[in-house]
Image 1 (tube, one colour):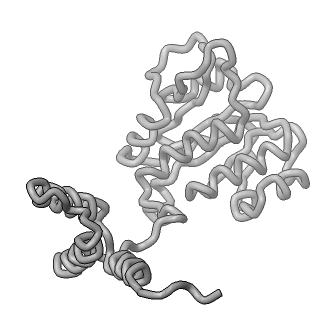
Image 2 (cartoon, one colour):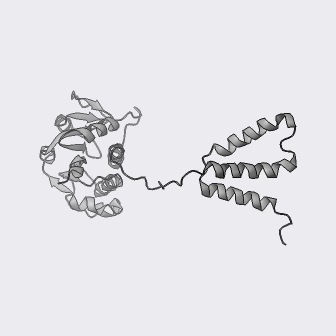
Image 3 (cartoon, helix red, strand yellow):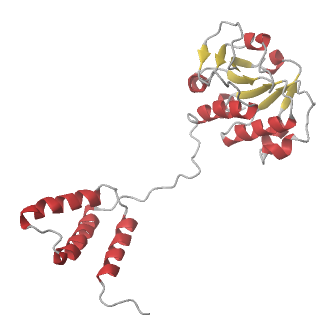
Amino acid sequence: MSSSTERQPVIVLVRPQLGENIGKAARAMLNFGLTEMRLVTPRDGWPNPSAGPAAAGADVVLERAKVFESLADAVADCANVYATTVRKRGVTKPVLTPEEAAREIHVAPGRSALVFGPERSGLETDDVALARAIITVPINPEFGSLNLAQAVILCAYEWSKGAALIQPTQEDLLPRASQYELDGLIGHFEALLEPKDYFFPASRAAATRRTLRNLLTKPGWNHLEVRTLRGVLSALERKGSKPQ
């Protein structure tokens, strides 16, 4: 097993009730680069035909999922076990946020497991007792109800922030325009504005030009954006009306 895989936490679902929720949890996992799911005595058995459609393409997670008879068996190879709960369970354990737990997982030796309880009731006290720490989130005291996939995605997302995943919408930025290009753009604006008495009165001309320069240099244009703006200005200064 590669070191990168070992650094990924295992997601353990204890007594999950609905196949759809297992599928949704798998989808949440794969969105953030996690692929190892372990199931402890799923109510409706495994595999479950309802899980696939709900996974929305996260089939690799479902295909690799392993079933265990007890939570102790499921986390036997894990040195760092975190129980997720938003309820007091009468167990004294360190209490961490998902972000704090994620930071620990990235540096802690040995495998880590994030343990989630059944949809209706969450983890039992005996389940929590097996963990080294508890993960919980600040939540509305009047409505502390997260569904299974929501709980998984909170923890998976926090882990992913330290895993160098690529943001889907991120694009390579073009280099910024050179000072020569910016000066050309500013000069073009000034040449168009001068005949319109934009820099009148003369006593304010220098300050007005500085303000214009500050305005045009602030966005950090790249060379394509500067060229586009120059094209706009050129179009505006052309003589003649648009053909009908």
